[in-house]
Length: 259
Image (cartoon, rainbow, N blue to C red; front, top):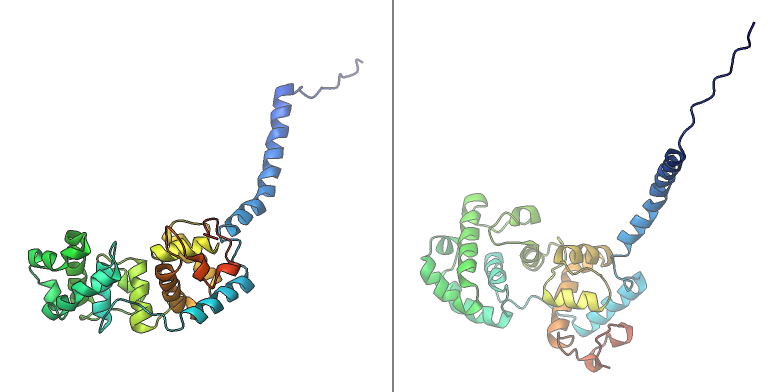
């Protein structure tokens, strides 16, 4: 009888073997990279967000601006809502000048909701972007009447349904009018200073707010916003910060310091 010849396993071409090894290594490598990706997300918060340093920043802001508050003049939540809409790309000083006569002519949501658009445009023209602001003001006023009985709502989700209202406006109204800490007001001053103080590495307002909400205690969100805005207007100005007059200078290592 003839002995059976053992069947040899089919040979695998060298290129396929190498490809198989690379695939396995890629799978192993993909699992190893996951912690690195998480670390990158964690680094979006500024390196200066160490809890002890943040506490020192808050203490110095308290010392410099113990009575900081919103500088938009208002008598109620509705007036603050309208003034905050008007403050986009405009100074609070100019808005206050316009508001002095504006709220005498339009004292409540009904007056704004059914105003003559052309007349309202002329009333708010000095604040800039008056056509878009007129649409937002009239739209928000109508929404208040139709959805909320003419009252400014007290939750962020509800207030964001109003035309022309984004998170900045919502935080201003909820924090100042109602004392509700729904987030951190992020305007041009807060963007500039939070980056200068290395509390965030982002440039987008929403992401900056998320970073600040992580590092600033919730009970300080409202006051911190006011204090940073005051500091940005009075000392840490955009083009030439007055670092010699700044009580944060010793713990600030911004690249554009003037000393």
